[in-house]
Length: 133
Length: 108
Image (cartoon, rainbow over all chains, first blue to last red; front, side, top):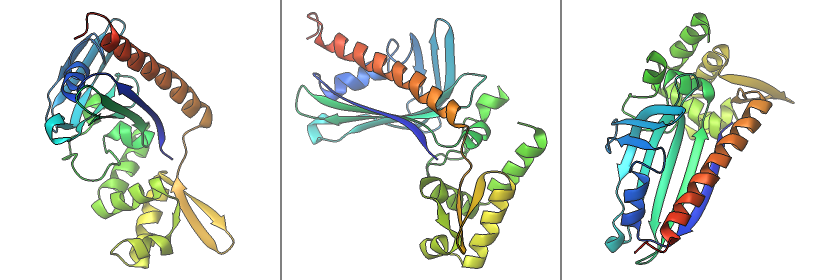
């Protein structure tokens, strides 16, 4: 059973600008620190809520080539299993971007021990460190 | 999670083929025969992997007539509903604030 949340929104801005906003402090959390490469560290701190995790994939959009951007990361607080978030930024013209969000708990048990169900790219590094922390 | 249960899970997931079997079943509940068709391993090997995953509590068996269908052990429903409601509301709020920010008059 895959439990997931999906949202999609058309934004009146170029994909570059949206990428800048979603990867910076102020949106996902007040303080956002993201190492934008596979296996990079990720932390999200807001008043009363701190999450940390790791980056699975970070590909900046290239609007001139109509190429979509994708940021996939795992996050969780210390006392709950990590979840996987995938943000996709589809360029939709010079001043339009379709932002798609998918947050999933593929399988709670696997999250806890750090084995993402997604095939491939994880490179053996997972949210296990959330549990070990 | 108790240590014994965690050990059983780690053991069951140590094998890459078994992880592949699990990720397939997570998407679509399946029988051993269906999995053997989809994967480059024998039905006998599939059955072994499925048993190990079921023993670790990751999969459950569902008997339908003469078939045994495997699916991922579901989390308690109430928990899933709460999570979807809470986390969904957080995303609605985040997306609304993003849209507001981009439509604000000072935005170029």
